[in-house]
Length: 124
Image 1: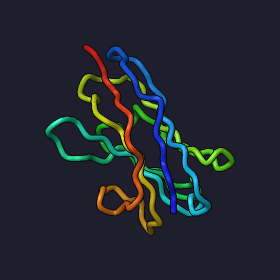
Image 2: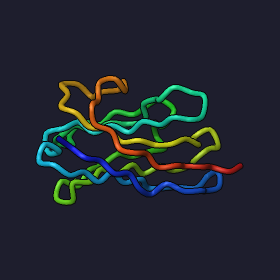
Image 3: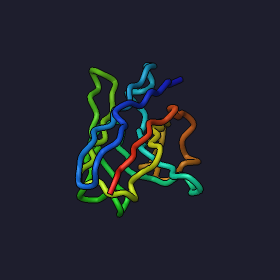
């Protein structure tokens, strides 16, 4: 079992940056793919980025490619999502998710473990 807790959200102006953190507990974290997703009001949850359990592979949504970096610190059991050049359309609740996957997990239904989410709001 893995428990996840996101932090680092907030209100930022367009063009600004935020670093989200996903702190995990549970030994299985070391072998899980970690994904970041977001959900805006009235919209489906969508993939943002994912990192393999080894940290050797990453994947990004096209909308975030070049503006975000996912990384992990195994000693701290924490995955980070650095987001730069934020836009108002990036406003959403951001969730991290974990599961033992053979692939990079770009679809929400692939993950069984979820955090509670952290709000990111970008003003124009």
